[in-house]
Length: 199
Image (cartoon, rainbow, N blue to C red; front, side, top):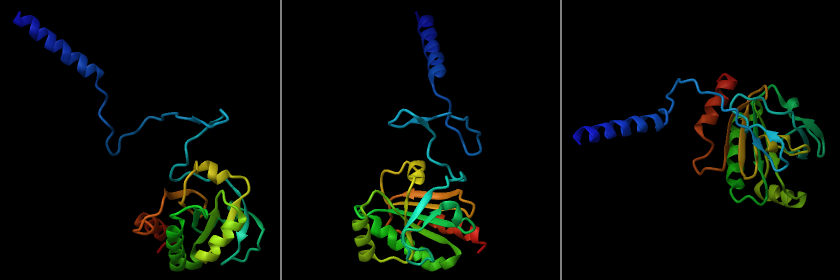
């Protein structure tokens, strides 16, 4: 009887070991490509949001507020025309409760780095009247654009605000985050900016 008990216990441990998942990867392990794709509401397949280092699509933009730029109201431009300097994208809307906090922080970032970086507010799913009122209330030191093709909003799967993206001078994603923090812009952003600017 004792022998049967031991055999059952041994068998149980063997089965348990066979069903247990592999240990999680450690730093430096090569991860397999998941091949994961997601279908949107139309059923078409689309890739996951961009990873750090990915080049962003060349979105068509229209100047909504030209403050701090040489552009004109209503001027059309392409995101690629801004290449050559680090680019900060501040997605906001008048209906977003925490957007004023991020707006202040991005304004401070612009004041700190001046013309060495390009900063764009990107108004998202807003009415022109509400957006103009918001800019009047909160002030503007950098221009705001609207997307004409929605390429960036789609690329980032944007559905909530505020959203911040830092791009390299060749339009690659360097850092992004959703939401505003009372702590200010993360140090990870300024470290990347300093590296891009050679400071």
